[in-house]
Length: 196
Image 1 (cartoon, rainbow, N blue to C red):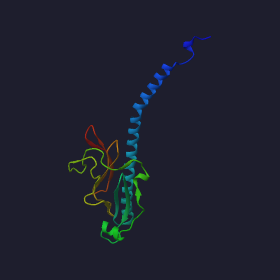
Image 2: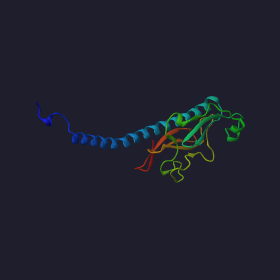
Image 3: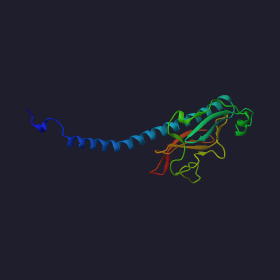
Image 4: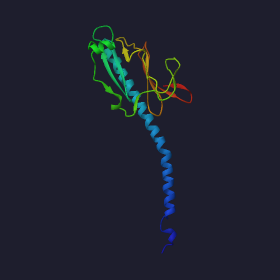
């Protein structure tokens, strides 16, 4: 018969093993949660960039101005494309009057990526060069409007949409005016720079 010590684990051994497992779990959960926030934010930014590209392609295809209207909601955002219906560009007042009709139904970011929205979650330099943007500031940098407009020749309203999860990286969808190019940028906290 085997000695008592070789039959299995004792209560103190089991408690030590459980304590070690709890410690390892406690240290890995924030890392996993941070990685998930990072991935969700990246996918959310790519979704917004794709919707922006869609509006640009619709303008080229239709030979008319098309604008993506961005509406900020509490912890969410809604995007919808509209086409110029009266030859003067897409204007907010013309959308409200029904002169510039929608190209598609409105689409909420939360329907595609939970916990990610247009927001500024940390102090960052403005990509447009106008200084610093404070935490929880307006994430839309499109001038005085909420419309990102594309012309039938491919040019666009220059602007930036800042987005993130509550934690994790600060991202931005940047549209250049002359070319209509759309890029997703990530803020590198260590270098204090925006990187592709």
